[in-house]
Length: 67
Image 1 (cartoon, rainbow, N blue to C red):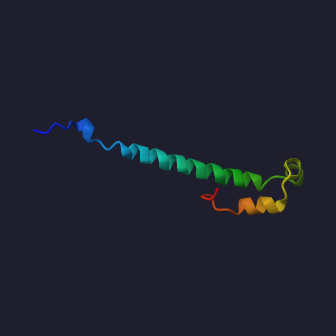
Image 2: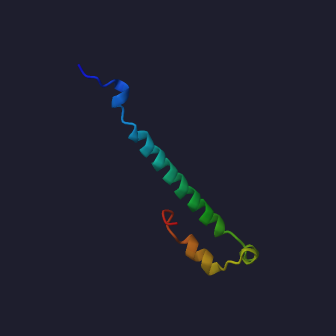
Image 3: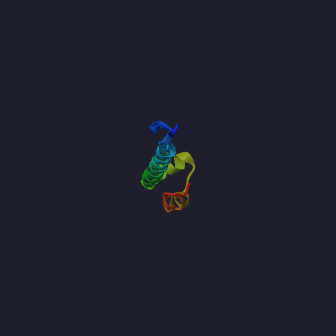
């Protein structure tokens, strides 16, 4: 007779993997939204924070998976 219970045979790594995937998707979605918002800033907004349009273009053109 086996001493393993049903609970001990459950793969507990699966839920951790799903959580990691979910977190990564959330980060990517948030990064994409932030870059889209940044591309809508006015010259005044950029001046206030010390950024130029070339800074914005450089950031906005990055793929969502790149930080």
